[in-house]
Image (cartoon, rainbow, N blue to C red; front, side, top):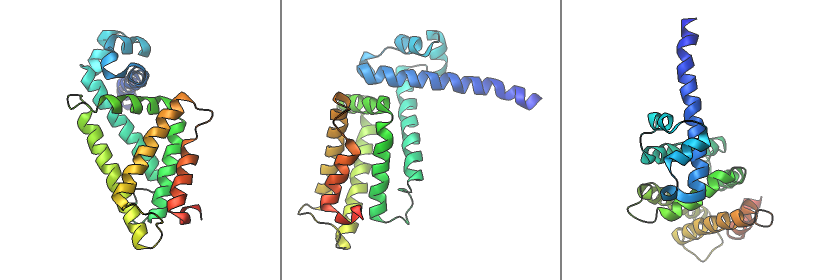
Length: 206
């Protein structure tokens, strides 16, 4: 009895935080970090401004929690696709990343958030600057290592070096995501990227 009762406040607190972060996704995705206000986020979440400040004292705290949530969701997808398993070969790793892009298309709010914040975060003064700098370093490393392994196996058909190809793929993904937000009926992120990757890694279609 006492155990169930003790869990109540924690469950309620977690639910409030979830609502705040969902409201934050909408607010930051629409107006960016600088354009959004904590009062607007509190209103979207259906709580008082004081209640929001109890959970997240500053807007920077909100941003940090939001980026952590995004990383957790991304990791869950990559784990389910076995991308993070060191025993997975390069072809399956690429297939896993494509599966992640499919999941992203089902969550347009998160994609909008990424496009807006990553654009803002190019400024060194932005609180998410280091986060995105590391994110792109990690992505380039992943694709570079994947393409290098495919080249060693004779399965890469490209005149570009693995690191250059990695940069091109990341740029293609970012561009497709931005275009998809403008026209979701005709722009197909996963299909287009799969076609490109298959042109340089024919075995991916096998």
